[in-house]
Length: 415
Image (cartoon, rainbow, N blue to C red; front, side):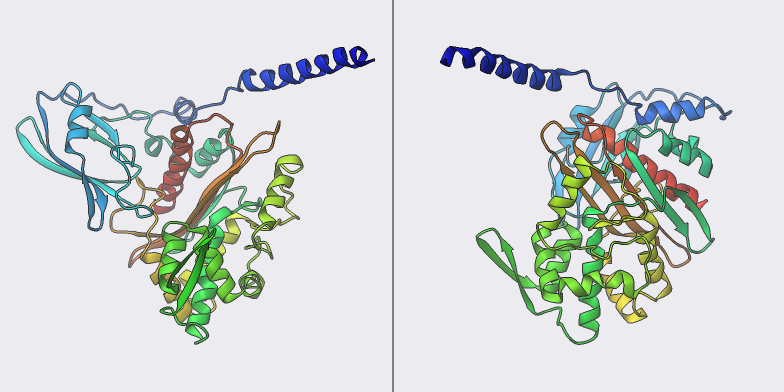
């Protein structure tokens, strides 16, 4: 009798092994790279020619540092080793020698001698440093000159994309699926910040008072102000939970309705454990969320920009609270459009990202940010989100899309 069941059982196990192996080794779907799409758009329009620069005879890296504030790493040797045929090409990133100051935007500073002339240069984290500068005929900021070209770029992204941006000074806007709901991940922490600052402004909370951050079995005590910097600066989830418990989740979730912010979930910051069920629903049922269904911790690009519109207008509850919010954000700047944001502009806001995997289902992943970029004369805001980047797509390839589209949005809004 046992033998009768043995063969079917072995056959079932073999089928399961073959299924799993097939799932693992099945050829991955090919997708367009960022540069492929940019070149395709460039091929449909005349672009002025670029003359080839002369090759340098001598390049000497004297000193190179990577960091921020008072935390700098000496990366001179690393850059010297990257020099080839008197040329250097490298991205300013933590890949050079690690992260000297977690959660803060950094710069790469280089002193060098090129063909007998001493020079220095400073580039933001995320930007490519080229010595000498090498003109790129397919530079995205050279190719994407109109809102329609920006939309074409977004339409060809291998991930689902949505964005909305507005220049408050000129009234100019750019948009692609600005009303489409998506998971906002840690972007929603700006609502926690707002409620904290409202209660501080009304005298119900002191920014210097202590708050307890629970990290598993460990506890950490710090001031509310320090917890804010952890939440906005390094996106500390435990610090966020501590602040949310202090000011009450209900108060945070009532903000969108109070401020008439369409496109923001009424449960924009769900209590721990809720988001996991929401992500399961995204994986198993809803690749694209219906516009009529704002799931917990979901919102639209327009909804997030509405937050920064109220901040800009002094109506984020009131002008005093808005100033407190902006001051806290200013301590933790975010340069997610590094090439297009001029050095004299401030860039604040919040980014977010997450991934969620279930057996035999495509991985759900999300990334994006909402920013307020301004100086004394001009201000703009935009929100950009990505969902469902293909599994196996490298971080560098994803970054080309996220940073590239961000730079294009800011570039067009500033034109």
